[in-house]
Length: 117
Image (cartoon, rainbow, N blue to C red):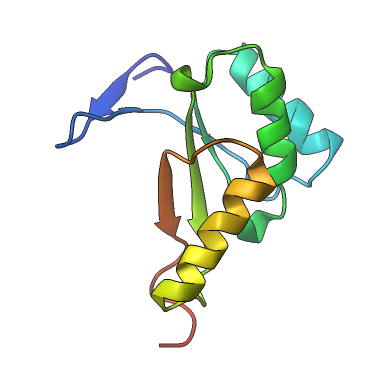
């Protein structure tokens, strides 16, 4: 598998098979530069999360990349402790604002087995 391979899910959406994760990459220049290099290297799936604290830097690198947004698949994650629709919606909106993109391609529950029930 390489960065040009993808999976097609049941609704026809294509997800790049290999993604660049940003866990433990500090916000600011480190995250920005890491994502910039990943995109220049051919990655087209970028993964971040609210809990990583780097969504804004990741989004800025994506916007500045010169790559059409339709060519980049972006994943982010809802904090594990959020367990109701209203808060999930609020955090999704917050992520869209933080990352500065018009949409997120995949929004996951971060560690769904953790946090209060």
